[in-house]
Image 1 (cartoon, rainbow over the protein chains, first blue to last red):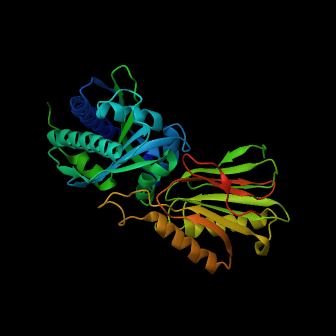
Image 2: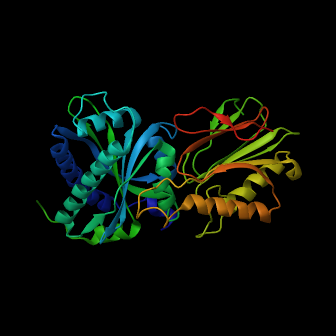
Image 3: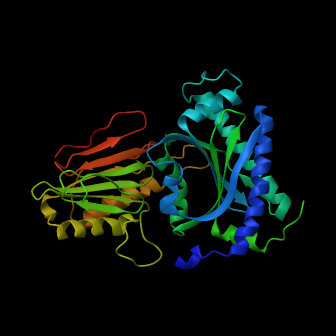
Length: 206
Length: 165
């Protein structure tokens, strides 16, 4: 990787946007079935992002949040991170556990387990969609749930990718659930080797 | 200097001798926040290092790595009027945020950052006065240039002193 990598191949980005749109839509469907509520995907996109800017993307590194993190292994290698602002994650738990809004007050074992399951499901559905499009198969690791400041949660991704380059390719989208407007940011961060594989992969249509 | 809060982002360092300045490194996970302060000339600096060592490339002016960042911070402080023998050095961060079985361990960068920092301090003959490192918790670190006070705050808790000057 060279400093010129930010001049990323626009063709690759265009191709990855197709993969991302399909992947996020698949994830949303899975999640929607799980919680039994309508769920929409907002502004799915793929972009090259400077590592140092990542904590700012989520409203600042000092905000409290919940992060669900998965490693991806197999023919594709990368990382998946679901980040939800603290208060909204409490509400998200209420929905998933099917209890009245405002019931969840903290993230105990049950709540963390529910969030882990959400990460697992959204990640798996995304990877399935990639497999359907490209024929490249991969699987997610068990999820790790972090309840902490945004900056420290994202250090996990930054430290892993920072040794490789100063910019990363990020697939990002946010989900909105029903009229409750829960913002959950969903990121896929492929390793550079995986990007090469995706570049040469034959894309299947619907 | 503007006399305000200065955020020290990933791989950045900040030096100040303006007593109204507060240097802040927000949300340190596996990253380290290292502060140095000269109580006589009242010049201080804070660095937000990300990774233990610079493996690719050879850029001594990068604050991203522990091995290049500490000498860089030291050099800039001396340039700004600090004396190495008087420096009060404190450090926080270096957590291992991943606690899931099968995920942690293999890349515990927090611990590697801490070990590298200790190594570099020893090599440069710098005495670390106080540290609050490791664990599984994120930290926000502040340095008050007026009196060299350094503080740590964790999620849901109050800001508290990390060793007074």
